[in-house]
Image (cartoon, rainbow, N blue to C red; front, top):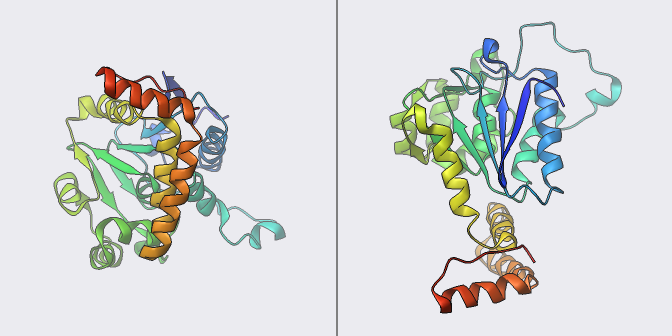
Length: 260
C-alpha cells in the first residue's frame, strides 16, 4: 500500500481517497497500482460491501502523471495489451460491488476515465470533466471510449472527446454524466448515504445485479434475459437472506441480511 492512496472503512463501505493533492491527484505509478491492487483485494474481502472513490484537496484526478520522464517498459510490458490503464478500468468494472465516485473537482484524462468506470458519479458545484487526450495527441484511454458513450450516448461522447471541452456540474448532470449534484461540504456524506441505501438489500442480490448490468452492455435482449435468469438462480442460493426478506416484509420491519 502507498501513502498516495488512503483507504478508510465506514462500517461496510470502503472509501478510497486519491492522496496527491499538490498534483491534483495525478495518477503516479504508485497511486495507480495501489488503487488497482486495493480494488482487486476488495473482491475477496467480505467486510466490504461497497466502495467510494474520491480525491483529496480541491480536485478529483487530473489524469496520468506526466511530469517526469516516460517510463521505460520491459519487453513484457510492451507486449501487455491493456497496460496499467486497462488494469485500472477492469479493477473498477469487474468488482461485483457498487463503486460510487465522489467527484470533488476536476476529473481530466485518465481521471475522467476512472470516474466513468464507476457505477455512478456524485458531484458538486466545483465538479468539472475534461477528456484532454486529443490535446496530448492521444486517443481516449483507460476505458473512456467504452464507458462514456454508454453513459451519455455516442454523439455526446464524440462531442466531449473530439472537442476536449470542459463540462461543468450542471451540464454533466443534464447529460447523465453525474447522477447527483450536492453541496461540496456534503459530497462525501452523500456518497456514503447512497452506498448505505444500496446496502440495505441482500448482498448476493446486489452483486448479481451489478453482474447482470455489466453483462447487458454487450448482450442482445435474449442473451440478457437468459443471464438474468442465471443470476436469479444465484440469488436463490442465499437461502437465509431469502427467508429474511419474506419475514421482514410480512412483519413490516427493516430486514437484516447476512449474505448467505
